Image 1 (cartoon, rainbow, N blue to C red):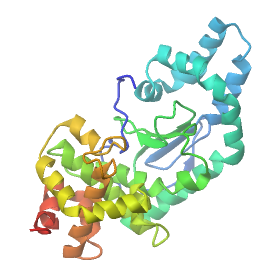
Image 2 (image 1 turned 135 degrees about the vertical axis):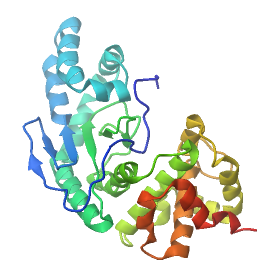
Image 3 (image 1 turned 60 degrees about the horizontal axis):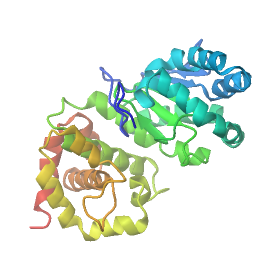
Length: 320
């Protein structure tokens, strides 16, 4: 992927304010397929993309490119720049990839109703506020893109749902991730200034998995929340001591590139263990913290420094 104006990340990073219970009040907005709460905006351009691509399909290339750039790229330039690249990269993708997949986009919208997805999302926002005491903040952008993520975030805090992703095959597969991503939004707003990139990234991912696991109240598994197979999760449990030593070695690092490796599913620190090992480590930190401080103590983590959570989890003493 080309280096762009923002960093594509699996977590969300944005916001300047703390939203207390009672902040949510859904309203309709005068924007295409948009809806917002006091803290959240939802923008769905999937139908618009397909409609304009079909209308431009048989135009001369120069006219087609101008129409596509003016109507699909320019209005959402920050999102496209952050996820895909500049206008040239956008048009190359459209002409060389997206048009070849256009029939599949149309079929996908017949299977997955994005209006229903929107309604489920705003219900999840309300439920999460009641569950955690906090409400998320930011923009959610639903579109067909280059399939670099199923759900993910940009460095400016915009949340993406790339409907073209091979992982986004059903409404259930998408919506079950809402609690995880909403927790990222909340945690970024509530957490104190970070002191190092690696520990923050590990805890952010693991905390989102842990809260989502609680939120689903027995209707999921830890492995599923980590996006691991059961075998991969068990391998981590069996190698818990070795993984904690990996944490000990790197948790003080402020290296952003290293922090991304801990969340990268293609990168393996150990050949016999899964990628994105930071998800497992972060989950274990939260798990041990809660064991020592009470069932509801996970809510403390929203406003604690990651270093404090780590030390109070006493995870480094487990295998001594």
